[in-house]
Image 1 (cartoon, rainbow, N blue to C red):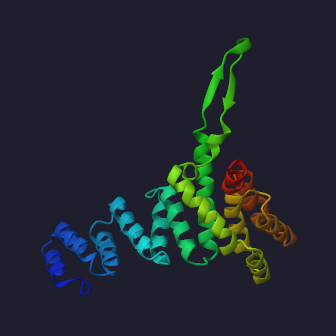
Image 2 (cartoon, rainbow, N blue to C red):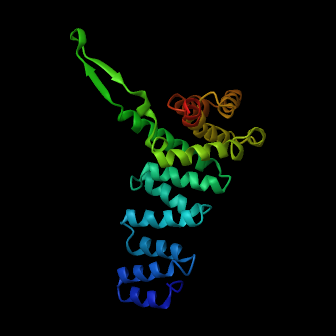
Image 3 (cartoon, helix red, strand yellow):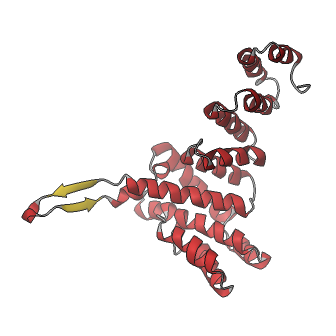
Length: 243
């Protein structure tokens, strides 16, 4: 309570929560900590309003994309069905633009990609042709690509990001370093995410498979990684080929 501005404290003591929110809005232009204070305030007094709460954490992430605590909160809300997969994907990507993350962040990103691909596949159009007395289903496979990669604005952002990440997260030197570290989970989860962006033939993905098989880790290689590879669309690879 002492962390809040005196006027905000008075408003809270008077149970004037909405008015306290308004005062915090005014502080946004003055203090960088106002975003975190607002998130704490919303979480304490209006924690069931997940839209408002997630917006607070998104604002913090945009201000400071290295903020792991805010990302953890968004992941938690997503896991409980209170936060959109596409939005979480964007927040994780923003986080990875700013830091070199541990394996749990890459695992979450890969899972988001898989979820988006499966949702896109569920929306695949099917047209029925009664020729020769039989119904034939024609599937538009382009619809398997998640909307986050087809929307005009986000597509441009992701193409630039993928090009940058080739050096930032998936360069040969980083691959060698990840393998040398012996952290098979990090290597596998990064490769799973990479397969959705660059395709199954991407060197980072191929090497991760080799390492998993060498270590005879069936759970990581046969179950987790292969599941992602089989459902990946290789957005950046296909975008460059078709450009």
